[in-house]
Amino acid sequence: MDVNEIWDRFISLLSEEPGIIAAEWRKSAGIPFLYLDTVSTDRKEIEQKIKRCAVRAMRGKRLNAETIFVRSGKHEWVYRHRFYVPQEKMFCCGNLCSDCIRFR
Image (cartoon, rainbow, N blue to C red; front, side):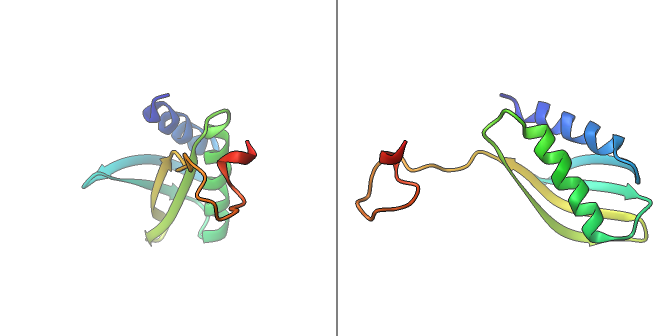
């Protein structure tokens, strides 16, 4: 699994969303940023579109997505967005955790 393929699919899905004019991602200092040009000025609506497209791009993969608002202009939005593999326990610690390796 290549994360660049996930990013490409994610950006293409975002670009097809109604209300989003342009979407691109760039890395700055090793941190991926998502740049959006939109028609809408509603932050919740934009974040719902990002979440919906991220879920569709990750379908069938064991990934999580994290999106953090950075700044906005008139119709420009910048988010720190990343796809990452969740960390899992590799042994039982004996504390009866709900995500214990024994319950698999």
